[in-house]
Length: 196
Picture 1: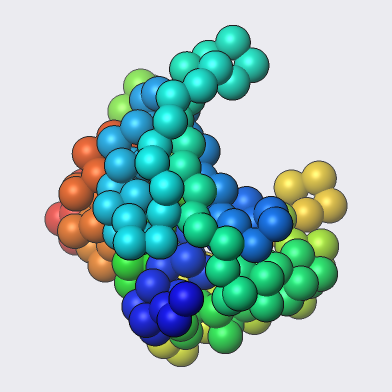
Picture 2: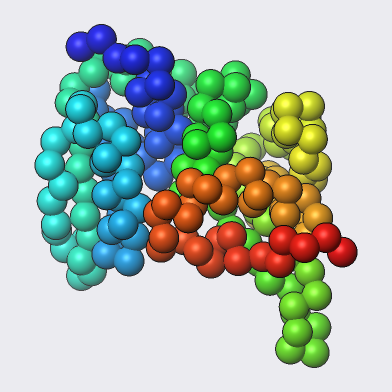
């Protein structure tokens, strides 16, 4: 099956986050609270996907769908799983909608409180790289392409990327239109977007 460039890039964005490639298919699973998000993903690639089904996952209601078997998925699986999934080359391909998908899958917005009041934010993109060098490649990409400044976040020998309040605002402003379409992740963009 011939895929459009847009569809290939959407598949890539889903695969670097919560998606799983197996037997030439991309499998997407989300919990009941994230059903709206799964529906949105399904709509984006419905021409190559099967129906959504409900199932019980470790005692909890969840939903899933998978794509048809695709040569493209067979080709990219070794590339994605034999090395770090997130690379500057992939980020160049997935665009802003892909960054939004990655953030909704693997990002978080932490509200830092002092005396019960929010005084700062920390936005984290969980890459879990094995080396700081790989994290710095992604940091350089964000700085060069989007003028957003991230820094390295270390956690138990793994490396992710993070940014503070002002840079979080810039990133959220960029991806917000897509996150708002989904609805169930409003808490991930709940930041005061006023400067200061």
